[in-house]
Length: 177
Image (tube, rainbow, N blue to C red; front, side):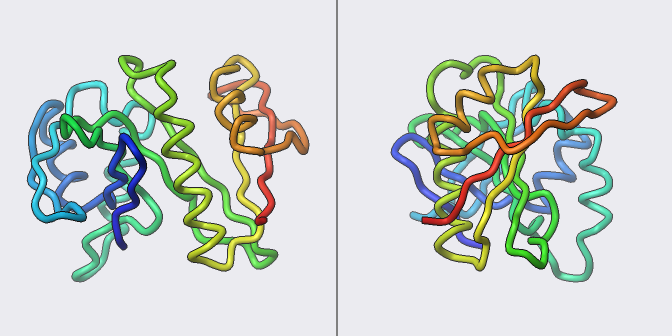
């Protein structure tokens, strides 16, 4: 899976090596394949946030020589090599062409527009490089910042839901251009 580029971020495929290392320690540096060659990416203790408990499952699902989690990316700042977030798809696309995404960023970079930049690149990638016709997401009612990210990118609220972890949810959809 190729890296995706934004003005301030590299979206690098989430690899077996990153999963394994993060389960061993909370602060580390790994050399990853960037678009211009090897790149030292620094991972701090806040990365990846909420998705960390699913890392053992993701690692176990990688079979044989499969080195990357399909559709999942590390968001690293281009100027510093610091991993500041994670985003990607939540499983394969549905038969109707819908694909759910999720994302999270380190609190230290909240409010800087990095989530909007990264999610916008992922949505564009899904609409242009795959057969995804509708990108979906859900945000907790208690997380208006995440709702603003999706609104800025042209997502529209299409319903509500509920999760035991996050409480009331807003369901969002973004149609292919």
